[in-house]
Image 1 (cartoon, rainbow, N blue to C red):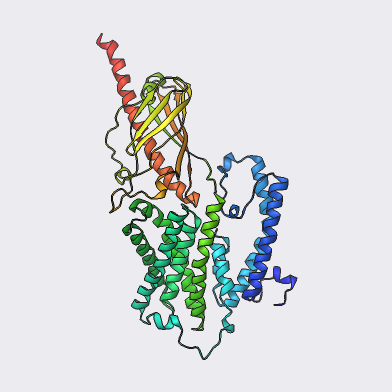
Image 2: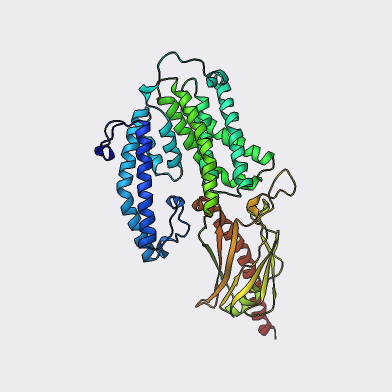
Length: 472
């Protein structure tokens, strides 16, 4: 395993799995030490392994402090030579393993780059697998040769370990993270397709169908054995399906481009290794205790009434009508009414939802301009839709945490009021960018329901006040 310094920048030629593994681990260790030194000694910030794909404290770009921009710019400058070396080594390893070079794009996908690195570290070069004398392997005996039988086998036998790892993450570690929502679907799609194409290369369309059906089977099992509810699985399905399709695409490339049948054993062994490595990723996530960033959702309406008229209807409001939005017919909690004990700072507001009440101590009472409150207690975010009554998975408690909220009233030149409701919250599902889309959407719908009710009540009261002098 001769090493030449030029191996770090030239993209021609090949590199074996042993050199690839040793060089990759060494360079990663060097880069991590550099990043930790720069983060702690220069910028006074903590740094861990998970910071390579999780930036919990990153605000919106237009809100990013200049010091934070300098920090990330420095890390990017340090990363550039390592990115080049990683890309060229991965290209040469792909060439050595007989895989298409476009798979190098996985080098840039968070978490999947780690899984792909392990896969490339296991798969041998095409010419290094013995060409003859292969005894009938266990996989060859077990996996049917027919397309239908091998597809069923690929879908079924990969579902069991994935369901077990899901239970470990959700019930054992109380962790809804990258390993669960990214690592598992990728390994599921990859493994099912490699089993399906074990005896002979299969068409791309059918490989991707097998990957999707494996996700569908796992989803049905999770619902059927009361591990998760329908709504959570439905929300995770787009991400899981997309990542499983990516895994299926990689599986197709492996089974389609590798000329020697014996190499399929190596591919299946590699998938077994990946499924075995995922519990370590989940455990690392659990121990890292990643803090999600504080997100803000802001929704505004224009009310045909002055701020003083609007104020009286937002501090507390009467029973809301039944919701028309379909999302609130799925079990997701929605507001019913608001009550308040006291007046001014220190008063306690109770916003009653279908699952219980938010307890909201008043922090700012600037009538009729600003009402701001904290959140000292909150109910479950939904009643899970499930064949089983009273299903209560861990994510219903503490994973979507409202931290504070406010109503801002701004007078407009036409005598109307711009009423803006804002909620600050944290979502402990990862990847945060994906789950933030769901939670932002739900909170916007909740805001819309409340603001529309306040608008109706305030405008009705304003019309009554305008009509009274005319009647007199």
